[in-house]
Amino acid sequence: GLDAHRIASDLDPVAAGQSALHLIDSFPGLSAIVATSGRSAGGIMQALHSRGLRVPDDISLLTIATPSLATMTTPALSGVDFPSAELGFHAANVLVRRLDELALGEPQRTERILLPAHLTLRGTTSPAASR
Image (cartoon, rainbow, N blue to C red; front, side, top):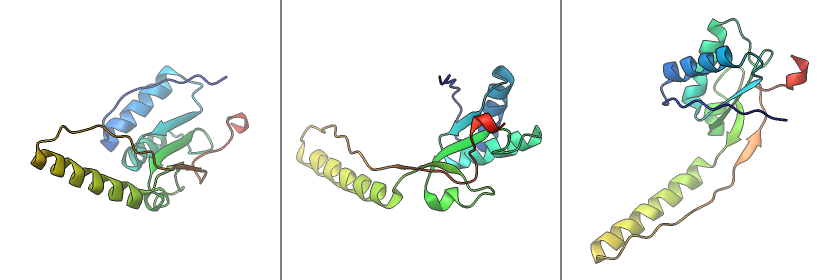
């Protein structure tokens, strides 16, 4: 089974790193951390390194980031890649519709747009059993 533990932190890399160290101290058998951004993943990697922990040998790290950001670290970040260009396109369209609705005095509607995301394993993950 999978035991999940969650701790909230802002996107600041230092705060994310401190949160990761708190998780490791609280759950010594922790095998992986999921960061909500590439920026916070960088802080987590630094914090893990400061404790002598090696990614992915000692702990896996996944993130939600654009592929270009995920491949800028060493090792490259495994994680959920999202289509940033498509995200920007849809965001701009929603903004234009909202402005049109506001100008016409129409009620603003809520809409949900689902974009494809892909899990890409790079250099920051390994099977927990190998540790």
